[in-house]
Length: 403
Image (cartoon, rainbow, N blue to C red; front, side, top):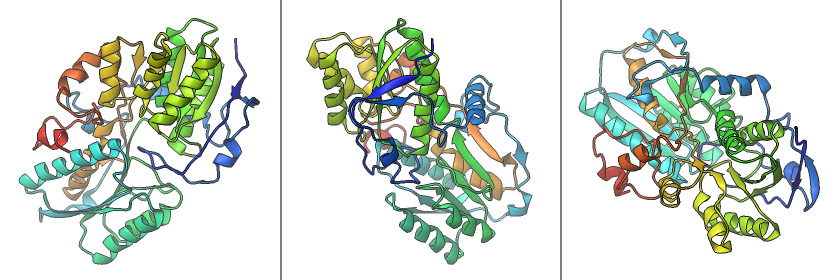
């Protein structure tokens, strides 16, 4: 039975910087906000739902990636390799320049630590001589200036870019490409294919579907679900929600509504508490796992049974999942992707083939794999991400433990 509509119980929005997300329309919240009790269509918004891409990402979840299974940051799903001989150099000690959107959340902090240690490993091998980093603090104008400064310096043998937004950063990425040095883009995309390679996990549709399918599979028909979203108008997050809408729309679950939380734990707990005061909420779907523990705490405070819940591979959630024997899943936007651009840049400067679009695996943490990730990250802090992929790098584990 298709449940075509949900009731929105009030949606707040705020400018907020996120894990791996792109905000290109800061006013988009105006279109998505609805008053309490307003009925809204559960069908995915055409602006954010590309059915062909949705189906592709869902299919990619079942494709065995090529490359070593014990080094997933080197794996790629159905890669189309390209020749990079035009950038080959025998000089070694390359200068890599990295324009970073920010380190404004724990996911990015974890990833950047891993990237730095990957650079150190390649410095020890004589592949990298200098690693120059700019941090735009999630400001498009600053990042555009950062990229231009790298280009104008003439010192960069390769430029790595993690764009803060998609459309706005596109001209700056094109300018970097036009400079003649190889450009590697990862995490968030841009509207140009001028980079030598674009590196990313499967994507937001796969993430949202992993979470929604788990709730459908683990809840009885007619069960109630609350969706917790961070904010509207963010491509990766909108894709996650669009996938969930698609899955929930074809299920027999009752979607009570969705709430924007700004990724704030207090707001998450407050929203869940309010819904619990109105009645039972059997499942919690989240477009990002930050604050999943606070959602669970709302049930504890209300003296109610835990919900079926989707979180993320942040250690605080994985530990709570284990301690309370939750029925849960942790979709991931694989953090080990931060290693891959550095490796790709060195490969390009060595004239080795790389995937034109480097699609990394994106395997959620499940009940079957939970203990493994807990053991591998036993001494890591709560805000660490389990699939960071740095166990074989210099500085492990102290660099990540002592952040």
